[in-house]
Length: 147
Image 1 (cartoon, rainbow, N blue to C red):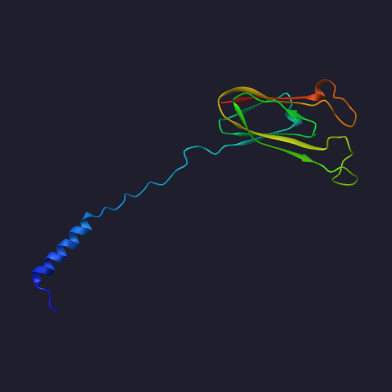
Image 2 (tube, helix red, strand yellow; image 1 turned 180 degrees about the horizontal axis):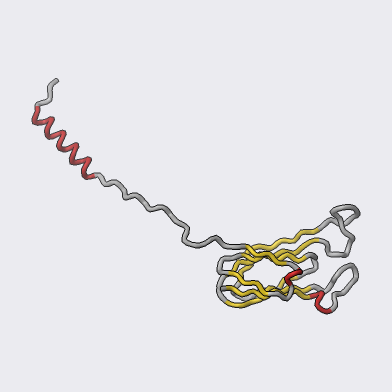
């Protein structure tokens, strides 16, 4: 069956018009990271009494080496984003400790949330088996400046 030339021409025109009316979505620009990578600062008993400076978004991980430590609540400049305790098994031999020593660690992870100055603090009353902490042995303080 032969299609008359006029019908073929109209059909071709309609096909072209339909193709021309379709819109192609614009290419999306790539997503680029606009902030620098954040840093993680670690602290422990060796940093007691010191000052650390963080940028907003940086992380601070404080690990104290006794399960007897109890952390205080810092100011709004830091948000606690993680916590964990590691307890060393009681017993003898490598990897074990004597009962009552508080063997293990207490760790808190904070994220710097806003500019200002605050402190990470911790206290303990026991410094070993049947030993009360005396003087500075029962306190921990790290001053944190967030810029």
